Figure (tube, rainbow, N blue to C red):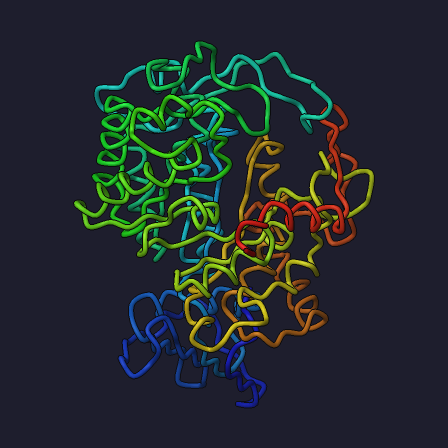
Length: 482
């Protein structure tokens, strides 16, 4: 939807332009790079962008400005507040075929988001074909059963699930996104969240000989750091660099228990298991540097060896954004209590698999990527924000739609528009925008609440209270507070 623009003037009269009418388009480098000016007047429609991307965003606003087959007279001048306006899509927990990924990109670009963080691997599935490593997709891309609902219930569906992308599939996704000025940032999580890869090649692990993980949660089965394992990681990251032109390459780095690394520490002459991950991250960062790339990783890297030029995805509540910015790292702000779209949307018992803290439409709209307490120079390190779509409880594209929209509409305004926002004004504009989502076939959550068909009683959830989660996050980030 059209965010509250920097400048809007609809006083040019009560007339309108009938469609179809191709707009006049030109680029003016005096405009902000991603900014645009959109005018509709008796002599026609004009879009002036600071770049091709600016023109594209002007065209999206034009699409949203149309009323029936007419465009009202007026003028909009606008530009984004942040250069990183991202959404993460987890295709590891539930595989999403290429056409569904392309549709996801279309919808994100329509809302002027410009980064797709693609979470390609995890304990529950490996989704990228790698030359010379056939078992990654023969074994690692498939699990025999999937957990139903929150892990506290111990329920499974007993049905195999899987899938993977070929190199050509991923190149198609990258090219499609680029046409819509969306950068695809790939993530291959390492050295934790690697159980699917270890199931395919047990020599990469530390004695684990089981299968791809079926349950949610954190696996203690992590990568070893032998030369063979390091070569494996370099091969994978090299292949990823061949496919994805993004300067940033995600290597995760989150939720990696050091329990299995006593021998690894001795092997590498390190003082103990906790020193293994910083050493490993440095090895991967050095390799990516040879390809002209930089590390993109979760905020655990702040205490586990973040390379100085890394970009940090700060997720464990609001504090890691502060810590990363104060330490001089560029930061993408994505605190779970504001940006995790798998979290429940209301206390209505009809919400499907209600997990996490309550994250309503208004809660998302209230998010600001820049938390209070930073100096101007520190705040400059926050390059934007990102909404994260973790799919443990989203078994279909239809479910992804329900959990993502219209909350992603609200998020799009938080990373495009000014820090000053008005929720009632947003709701008014959203009500006019929802018919556009209907036309696009989006299974968004109605503002009135879940429909009976949205419930998922066979996959029960585990709601959390915000005070409990904040207390947990405080403990999780204690090392950053020292």
